[in-house]
Image (cartoon, rainbow, N blue to C red; front, side):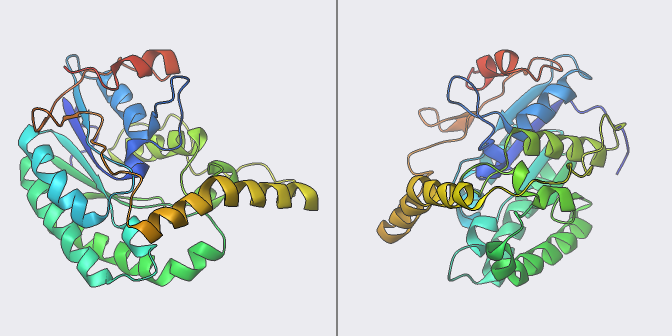
Length: 279
């Protein structure tokens, strides 16, 4: 990869991680690492264009079928593709099939762009991570092979201990919080060859373990607000992404569209206004 390249356009493809959950803004929308990265790239390139096609809850087959063609059609300089984790975290999963569908998406996207970026997704430390670690590691090993095939950049978020710290995750225990997304944006920024603006791997201060009552209250709130609804969706075959499209995809027109981010702006007031504004 040519380092420190000036990119003039960026398309983000994936699921809730790339959509930006749970980096919430005051108006109820999400920002996330991809929006933050787009704003920083825009500061280096007047007229920069950006499209985020990611949708929460999507499996890798849906990403390949619904997002890869519209993304490829935009002909962006830079494309990020992150998917498959929703698949491997399900009780039943054929990881070989997941890898094949990821390869299908990458095979379509790589020829359409100057630089493809893949990621080893982060995982919150705990029993859930350990249960699914073998599947995740199989997927991540394949991502390395896929990157070599396409000359893609791999951002190893899974290997960064700090991104496993529960304090960088939202209350739903599935998505990064604002600080977690900020660190991912910095990780991709550096992987693209740009000068570091912060140490995204820097460990947090030693944690103070909450008392028993606080832990039980947090567990009860998590179960009520997040776990039970998630189980309900699984039992009824529903997804949090049903009926949704990417922030920069028009269902009426059946195509993706560009927006122009505020150059360098990372404040909620600067970002919220362009998330769904057609360019």
